[in-house]
Image (cartoon, rainbow, N blue to C red; front, top):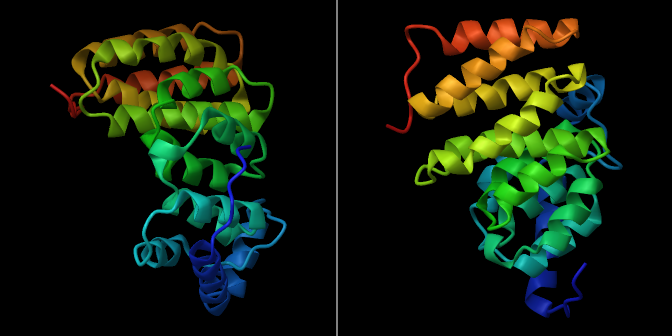
Length: 233
């Protein structure tokens, strides 16, 4: 990780945010997350909607985001993804944070709030999809889907390499849901990508794994439906 000198203003806001999240702690939400297998070293149970509203009151600050992440509370890590400056995020930071993810929630929040806005997003989506750790692969797939939705000016050819990766990742039953959502995002982006997603879905139906066969059936049915519309024409 890069070394940055601290400054009084970032420290002041950091301490202010710690007080504010403590005031919003919600034991019921924390217990619900834990019951769903979403565990952190410290979880105050502040709802995501409240964290997003809280972040709107502060300007983006890369140093502040690093301080928040290093605190390792659920709330501070999510705020870090909301308050970082995408143009200052390095590949090293992206790898360090992603490899330390503890659960799907923080993986999704980082992908949705921050990774998708960085200049390394397309490359990291593929790289992480080939990772060894489950949550790293999960993040890679989730980022592919977010890019398909968020990068409205990107040409179809930028997304085509994702299909080769998803053809392999679709074999893992633990990645069923995120693979499904990502291929729906890709397949409803344009007619061209829809055709590629449908072809991949058909190939899934020929795999030896039952979960992959079911994934292919569900995708083919959804992506071939008459009501499918495309976000990019």
